[in-house]
Image (tube, rainbow, N blue to C red; front, side):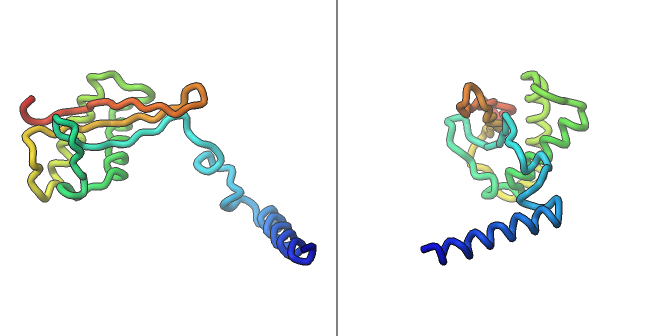
Length: 140
Protein backbone atom coordinates (compact mmCIF):
# COMPACT_ATOMS: atom_id res chain seq x y z
CA UNK A 1 0.00 0.00 0.00
CA UNK A 2 2.78 2.45 0.89
CA UNK A 3 4.54 1.72 -2.42
CA UNK A 4 1.41 2.83 -4.27
CA UNK A 5 1.00 6.09 -2.30
CA UNK A 6 4.62 7.26 -2.65
CA UNK A 7 4.55 7.58 -6.49
CA UNK A 8 1.20 9.45 -6.29
CA UNK A 9 2.59 11.87 -3.71
CA UNK A 10 5.81 12.28 -5.72
CA UNK A 11 3.86 13.19 -8.86
CA UNK A 12 1.76 15.69 -6.90
CA UNK A 13 4.82 17.30 -5.30
CA UNK A 14 6.58 17.52 -8.70
CA UNK A 15 3.51 19.15 -10.22
CA UNK A 16 3.28 21.77 -7.47
CA UNK A 17 7.03 22.51 -7.56
CA UNK A 18 7.02 22.86 -11.36
CA UNK A 19 3.96 25.09 -11.25
CA UNK A 20 5.62 27.35 -8.68
CA UNK A 21 8.83 27.49 -10.73
CA UNK A 22 7.00 28.22 -13.99
CA UNK A 23 4.85 30.90 -12.36
CA UNK A 24 1.48 32.18 -13.41
CA UNK A 25 -0.21 29.38 -15.32
CA UNK A 26 -3.48 27.53 -15.23
CA UNK A 27 -4.73 26.14 -12.83
CA UNK A 28 -2.62 28.30 -10.49
CA UNK A 29 -3.84 31.60 -11.86
CA UNK A 30 -4.49 34.84 -10.01
CA UNK A 31 -6.70 36.16 -12.81
CA UNK A 32 -10.18 36.98 -11.50
CA UNK A 33 -11.69 34.88 -14.28
CA UNK A 34 -10.16 31.81 -12.66
CA UNK A 35 -9.87 32.55 -8.95
CA UNK A 36 -13.41 33.62 -8.07
CA UNK A 37 -17.03 33.33 -9.06
CA UNK A 38 -19.21 36.36 -9.82
CA UNK A 39 -22.17 37.17 -7.56
CA UNK A 40 -24.43 37.39 -10.61
CA UNK A 41 -24.71 36.02 -14.12
CA UNK A 42 -27.29 36.02 -16.90
CA UNK A 43 -28.41 34.29 -20.06
CA UNK A 44 -31.03 34.89 -22.75
CA UNK A 45 -33.83 32.91 -24.36
CA UNK A 46 -36.66 33.40 -26.84
CA UNK A 47 -40.26 32.29 -26.37
CA UNK A 48 -43.72 32.84 -27.77
CA UNK A 49 -46.46 34.50 -25.70
CA UNK A 50 -47.55 31.11 -24.29
CA UNK A 51 -44.07 30.57 -22.83
CA UNK A 52 -43.02 27.96 -25.41
CA UNK A 53 -39.27 28.15 -25.95
CA UNK A 54 -38.02 29.00 -29.43
CA UNK A 55 -34.63 27.38 -30.10
CA UNK A 56 -32.28 30.14 -31.22
CA UNK A 57 -30.21 27.98 -33.55
CA UNK A 58 -33.33 26.69 -35.32
CA UNK A 59 -34.23 30.13 -36.71
CA UNK A 60 -31.15 32.34 -36.42
CA UNK A 61 -27.45 32.25 -37.27
CA UNK A 62 -26.72 33.15 -33.66
CA UNK A 63 -25.71 31.50 -30.40
CA UNK A 64 -26.56 32.60 -26.87
CA UNK A 65 -22.86 33.38 -26.37
CA UNK A 66 -22.97 35.76 -29.34
CA UNK A 67 -26.17 37.29 -27.98
CA UNK A 68 -24.40 37.93 -24.68
CA UNK A 69 -21.48 39.58 -26.49
CA UNK A 70 -23.84 41.80 -28.49
CA UNK A 71 -25.73 42.69 -25.28
CA UNK A 72 -22.48 43.67 -23.57
CA UNK A 73 -21.37 45.71 -26.61
CA UNK A 74 -24.68 47.59 -26.64
CA UNK A 75 -24.43 48.35 -22.92
CA UNK A 76 -20.82 49.46 -23.30
CA UNK A 77 -21.62 51.72 -26.27
CA UNK A 78 -24.38 53.37 -24.20
CA UNK A 79 -22.21 53.67 -21.06
CA UNK A 80 -24.62 51.50 -19.07
CA UNK A 81 -23.04 50.01 -15.97
CA UNK A 82 -24.66 48.11 -13.13
CA UNK A 83 -28.40 47.51 -12.92
CA UNK A 84 -30.54 48.77 -15.78
CA UNK A 85 -33.93 50.45 -15.75
CA UNK A 86 -36.91 48.77 -17.44
CA UNK A 87 -36.86 51.35 -20.28
CA UNK A 88 -33.16 50.70 -20.88
CA UNK A 89 -33.75 46.94 -20.98
CA UNK A 90 -36.54 47.39 -23.55
CA UNK A 91 -34.31 49.59 -25.70
CA UNK A 92 -31.47 47.08 -25.50
CA UNK A 93 -33.95 44.26 -26.21
CA UNK A 94 -35.21 46.05 -29.32
CA UNK A 95 -31.63 46.45 -30.58
CA UNK A 96 -30.89 42.76 -29.86
CA UNK A 97 -34.03 41.69 -31.75
CA UNK A 98 -33.01 43.85 -34.71
CA UNK A 99 -29.64 42.08 -34.75
CA UNK A 100 -31.34 38.69 -34.46
CA UNK A 101 -33.67 39.49 -37.35
CA UNK A 102 -30.69 40.41 -39.55
CA UNK A 103 -29.42 36.87 -38.98
CA UNK A 104 -32.70 34.96 -39.28
CA UNK A 105 -32.69 32.15 -41.85
CA UNK A 106 -36.07 30.49 -41.14
CA UNK A 107 -39.58 31.71 -40.37
CA UNK A 108 -40.48 31.67 -36.69
CA UNK A 109 -43.84 29.89 -36.16
CA UNK A 110 -45.44 32.67 -34.10
CA UNK A 111 -46.60 36.25 -34.58
CA UNK A 112 -45.00 37.42 -31.36
CA UNK A 113 -41.50 36.64 -30.10
CA UNK A 114 -40.40 37.44 -26.57
CA UNK A 115 -36.76 38.05 -25.68
CA UNK A 116 -35.97 37.22 -22.06
CA UNK A 117 -32.95 37.75 -19.88
CA UNK A 118 -32.62 35.41 -16.91
CA UNK A 119 -30.50 36.78 -14.09
CA UNK A 120 -28.85 34.39 -11.65
CA UNK A 121 -27.67 35.94 -8.40
CA UNK A 122 -26.35 34.87 -5.04
CA UNK A 123 -28.45 35.81 -2.02
CA UNK A 124 -28.18 34.33 1.49
CA UNK A 125 -25.95 31.48 0.28
CA UNK A 126 -28.52 30.46 -2.35
CA UNK A 127 -28.72 31.02 -6.09
CA UNK A 128 -31.88 32.82 -7.19
CA UNK A 129 -33.25 33.70 -10.62
CA UNK A 130 -35.15 36.65 -12.04
CA UNK A 131 -36.70 36.46 -15.51
CA UNK A 132 -36.91 39.81 -17.30
CA UNK A 133 -39.00 40.26 -20.43
CA UNK A 134 -36.72 42.55 -22.42
CA UNK A 135 -38.72 42.92 -25.61
CA UNK A 136 -41.72 41.53 -27.47
CA UNK A 137 -42.24 41.71 -31.22
CA UNK A 138 -45.52 41.48 -33.12
CA UNK A 139 -49.06 41.56 -31.74
CA UNK A 140 -49.93 41.13 -28.10
